[in-house]
Length: 242
Image (cartoon, rainbow, N blue to C red; front, side):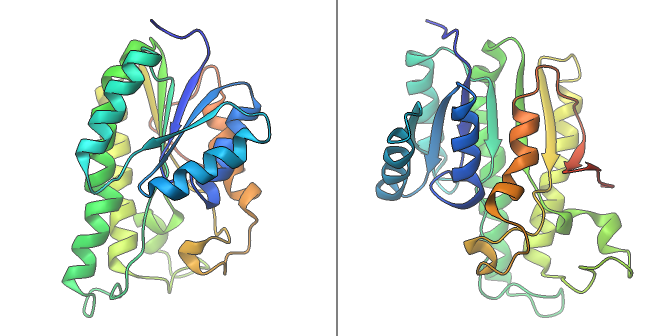
């Protein structure tokens, strides 16, 4: 049975930006499925948001285990019959990442497996549910570090930040965004990449200059749009060059 209530799934929702996105979308009256690879941490996060009176449920989604996404899709199909928004938020950094001449190949493979290949696999698992919604969205949480244009601009404030694994994985995610948006150019599913900005999270040892709320703001704004754009690279205040 299809649910009249809007349903959103956020990967990596047990902490940081993903947790705040889950909170804000649930506050808007949605049912939020908080995806996490660690079941204990995921359940704890969902319980914390439930204590705020929010409709948030934990779902086990591990980007390195496609079977978890397949199982989650079966469960969501049975309970809700659809998915209105998928926020691909989960991502990692890895020791050994660095400039092209020095990056560890093991780190490169690990980062791409999670940030790019895992995200594609998870998205594929949920596409039938997104199609069932009639009009849905995929939001890929990217980074300004994934912009080839900005990486090639010596005047960009982050021009010296060149870990090939992380930047490359986000550039690949941007390509996935553009191609998936083209595939669904009939309007059934809007697909966008969003740069949350340099936000203080575990990913950067909390060195970011933005708060979690600021980092989540554009993701939440776009997720709640009735008629979102598609094929865009967005950030608070405007659009980025690919």
